[in-house]
Length: 399
Image 1 (tube, helix red, strand yellow):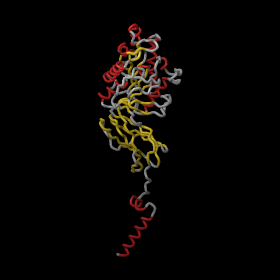
Image 2 (tube, rainbow, N blue to C red):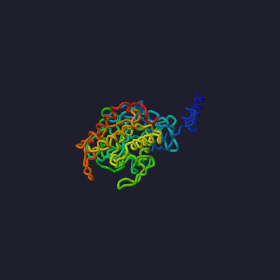
Image 3 (cartoon, rainbow, N blue to C red):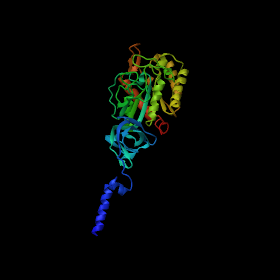
Image 4 (spheres, rainbow, N blue to C red):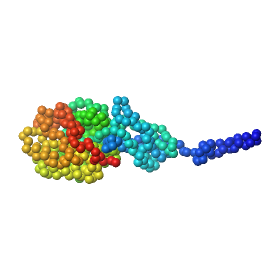
């Protein structure tokens, strides 16, 4: 018995001394290399709002770099204090791609937030250390476009929207570079990060605030507008000359860059279009305006492959002396809508002279004062929320 016991102990000692040790002996396979670690996260961004899909879930894109070993990634979400939504425990990312030390994948998160998100690598059943991205929401995202009343040309309102409102800042290249280097999200107060460098007030914080209250989800805004522009300047290939505050730009490319960028990030709900005063002042034939606007809407969808919804404001002139010309241009704007993919928005011309500022150049009423912007934002919110089919299923770009 003593000799037998001694033989067993010697065999165990030999086993422990062997490469791989007891782990290899017990598992019957080589020891697993340790899981790696995430080194950078480039998506999502802090305060980002991701468009929810028809199933009320947003496809949150994670991209970044890692070191060491990884064959997958997991993420989880926790609700920030006072926020509404559904937090998820550790869940594998889907559609994961790993190339060298780079990765991307999708985390499907129910609407709500803002959430704090954690992500960690996985390798052969092991999990690595987690990193956190703070304050990511899933809700409604809108691109705002057009001329000065779509940017910050009104009087500062001092309006403080809900903390659920975020604005996208497209970085130092101002949306001309389609990869948006240096992009970020920020609290959605005015001034909106605008291409034309306007620094006054806009209607968008009021609209977004009201939507966040009734819909109980975060609202994301991205302004691609440019003051003083005519409809022809938004058509494909039109090169807008540089000004004192804007570089040379093809505005159509800027718009489609936005759609393509967000297409990879669960999409946008719609483009909100507010433009027409320049064409009214230039006495453009309403039929030509209608054709150009219809072309812009069609080409925005065809070029990007994104069947994005549009909501078009009626905007021509606030001056009572131009009622006939104004009504013809307003009708041209209404004529491009179909109630299916393109929708009629507020009539901005009816927000009259008492709600306007006088133009320094002409002395005529033009942009909105603070009261006018609050009223306009309220009307945008009413139309977005109440227009049949606008928030209904369909026409969201990413799958």
